[in-house]
Every structure is written in structure tokens, then in C-alpha cells.
Length: 200
Image (cartoon, rainbow, N blue to C red):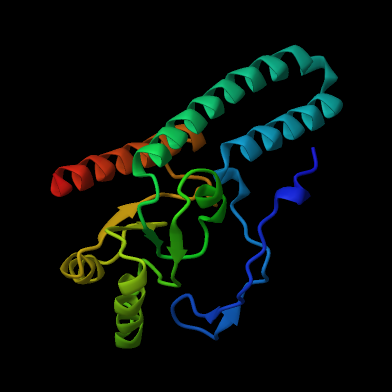
């Protein structure tokens, strides 16, 4: 299935680094389309059909496994929609611009920075964060991996709680897409609960 009509293109091309090395930029086509579970379902279906063409003798098994996977993805979609409804328009920060598809379908009020989990942001970046929070008063921030302790401590002083939401751009060392995504959702629900408790 063709999903090109649902690609998200970033208006800004930001130059940055990933640790030591030269600065670089990514093209403006955003990735991680599978963070929208409806797109993930279409990807799964397309992959299954390709395997069936290659291995027609396994068609029944492939189709059965596909239906199980689609059911799991439907469950994830419902759970993420429920989290999004509970959070409504609550402002959210993302450490990196990798959550656009998640934001478009589930968490609509998100703004992205260009921070790396294994690197303490520079003073200028913290100053920029303070400016952003004046217009976008987020209480929590999504991270692709756990940030450094010193980053976490500085965020907490600013009233922002980090929440790890793995994008699954690479194969996980443990678990699979469904189990890791369920863990992501549990962390979102936990943060949602804590936020509500603080407000009340």
C-alpha cells in the first residue's frame, strides 16, 4: 500500500551533531511512520503480501500471523488514542523531532527540540528551553532513550519531567515492537496519572 500521501515533511532543516563529529542535517522527510499504528498496520499488510508472493506455500500461516499482528496494532492504537484524549491539548516537549506521526494521531500539542540523551545540553540550549516554556508550558518531555542524570535533574528544576518513549528505529535487545510499545504506553499513563495528581 502506498502511504506517501501521509508522509510528514518538516519545514525546518536543523544542523546538529550526534556526539563528536561534524555537524549535519537530515532531509525534511520525517521518519518513524510506524508510530502511527494505522500506518504500521498498512506496512504490516504490505510486508505480509510480499512474503506470500515469495513463499506461497506458507500463505495460510502468514495470513494468520498477520491477523494476530493487526489485532495487536489495533489495541495499541486504541490505547494511544485514550491517552491522547486524557491529555487533551496538554503541551508536550520532545527531545528530538522523531515523534511527528505519534503527535499527529495521538499527542497533538507537541514541540520538538534537538537534544541527545547521552549529551548534556549547552547553556544556550537551556536558555532556549526557558523561552519555549513561556509559550509552551510543557510539564513533561519525551525521550528516545533515558537522558543523563544531570539532564534529568536540570529538567526537573524547570518543572519538566522526562518520559522515555522508545521509537523502535532499531531492533530492541529485549522484547519486540508490541511489548516495547506497551511499555511506552504504560509510561505515558503513569505520567498522565502523576500530572493529574499534582494538579489536583
